[in-house]
Image 1 (cartoon, one colour):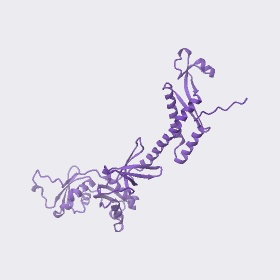
Image 2 (cartoon, one colour):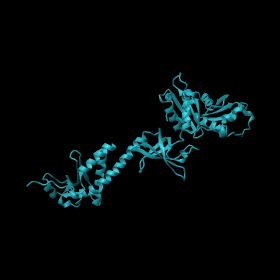
Image 3 (cartoon, one colour):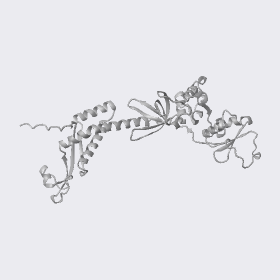
Length: 389
């Protein structure tokens, strides 16, 4: 009499599971090994739950070549007198019936009843595949966008929250796309966004979250200006011209310090471009934001004088200690050097990293009352995007 092939329990079709995993790997690029690990973990957890967590060791044997999954409970062989835990122990006499070689202390892999295993697999297999698929895709999206931190991406405005002005953007393409939130505080003041608009954003940071990767984007970050110039100016892209520092007040004005590694290449001219076309393209992308481009210098006094453009500088007096200085400008250019609401001096201080005290050329220290303070003229340096960020 021929032995009948053991019937596979209802819902437990290992061949279908492996076929599904092969398809997922081919179409989504998610490795079978990743998905199998998820399935094994879920089946093990489900079986322990059915046994009210009284089973200590459950293993699932995966045979990719023969496309099979088998579950075993590991039981330790004990003397009949010590046998107290039927879930994790097997008396020696019973073990001997399986094989005469078993001795006390041996560990035996006892197959789980096919009906039980099939029921567990049917109840968990599909769910685990779906969850594992989502998790793997989130991981892929995270890896994709994590590699683009501090870069520029183009996003499509999908929704604007009328309550707080936050804008939802769709960035990326296909399966490697995600929703990102452009907070109202990260939008350029005065810039009006509408649904369907394509805008460039700077990727500040990418974080993992339970709902998928969280991409933090900005339109106000100084890094956006830096990356726009790298895209627009070939000399910056190839390293001939370097952006050493940027200070920005989004929507209003940006100051940028540049340096050339080739004495035959004018760094400012390269950024401005023929007939000003390069810088005009960036100004248009930034909706009219003014951009001052100055030449960087290793000499702090020279750099500070350049940073205060368009005002002329008569003299820069560096402090003996600390990063501060006093700058003398022509009397008729004092307001120009300070700028509207102190903006020009403030940006120059951020750009250079020095505290700048601006005075008219006719100023004499002995003429000033000892307790006098000229707050708009004294500017504290703040963070600027330095070269390499």
